[in-house]
Length: 73
Image (cartoon, rainbow, N blue to C red; front, side, top):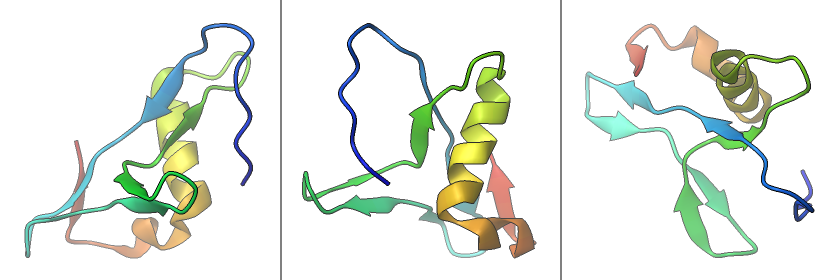
């Protein structure tokens, strides 16, 4: 995954994934910025924002689909 600065204003789509059994939030560690972030990314052409948010999360965390106690909000 590479960082590409945008030449124009673009839409970034993300989501919050909660594990309700222990109150944890799914975050990723940004090595370059040295901060935690929510999974997010740019929307593809003709992709809906909700679809882009799901795709971006599953690209980074494919096992989220196998987490029955996780809830997407």
